[in-house]
Amino acid sequence: MFIKKNQYTFLNILDPDKLVSIQYGIRSHPVKFLINKEGQLVGKSKGFREWDSKEVRNLISTLIQQ
Image 1 (cartoon, rainbow, N blue to C red):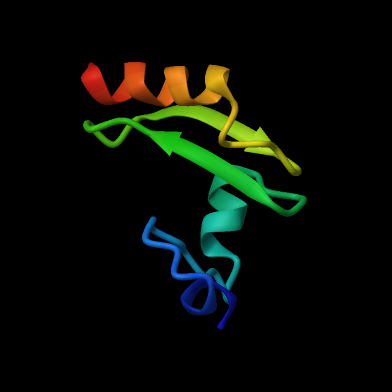
Image 2 (image 1 turned 90 degrees about the horizontal axis):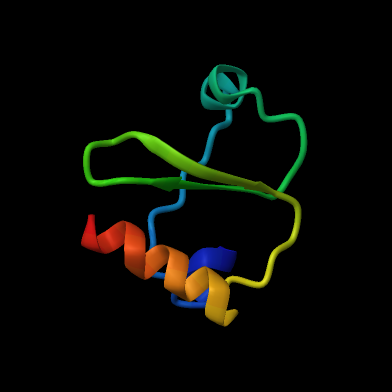
């Protein structure tokens, strides 16, 4: 499996029945969600994005501190 092979440690959800896809209105892949500590959706990104840019790292750090 791609996730295991690359040793990713973040949560990945497989959605074979498309229940989550329908609930969140996902029509393309990849889609990434940022969910805060309270379980609220605080960000969504469709398509490929660089997640190691300074701006994104600052955003994630800010969200973690909230």
